Length: 335
Ligand SMILES: [Zn+2]
Image (cartoon, rainbow, N blue to C red; front, top):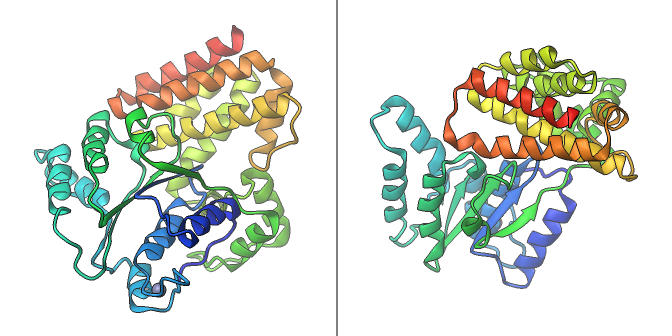
């Protein structure tokens, strides 16, 4: 069954929607990569379809159990399928496949009184794909509910944002973080000792997913390591090291993941520089940047990173783009 760590504010908002009978027809869950948006999306989907309307999601009824296994017929996850199909046959147009899926949603749900459609990572979709989705949510049928997730709101088009209820997914606290890390079953069956958990918490704050990925040391964590290296390089004004960190990434997705994390760290450094308490995650880099630059420069770097992250849907040449990111950061730092 689904276990939710942290996310207290997000859960409170969802519970208040549910208990007042006002579950939104389109919900956007946003927050840092790894924070647990997918798990929360599954939880909300369950809330919509649960047979026990008083205690939804009860996690016991047939609908809840099937939903937890992604086996409930009226909860759809179309994007991974569309992307797979497009990878298999690049002649197949993603926008057209999305349109066909949307058309299929005018039929009534099969097993429940609602259909829940989960669209992950809409911040990575092209403007054309987002506009196609817009048509879907602009004229909603009563039985269709939508859950979107995004690491970053900046690339989501304004017309979509204006039609969704956005809920920020908040991180776990230190205790929940420790519990999740110690309970996690790593593939090599190693356990994480308390000292390492403290170290990981200082690095990732309450971002359990990111910490687990990092601790597992898989390929997928390269984007995080690169973001930390790039921030260290910027703080030390070493342009070449920053460029090398960004060039080390193999895929476009990793590069945009890195840019997203750098933007988050810059935002934190700006807040910290303005006198707020040291935030939970990426403490070392936050302090280094705050010590190395004025607030204006940090803000300028943050804005540059956000602008570049917004280009994720334009499909740039990866190497040139890494170079553009580096020079933008360095220019903002020298301004
Ligand atoms: Zn249930």
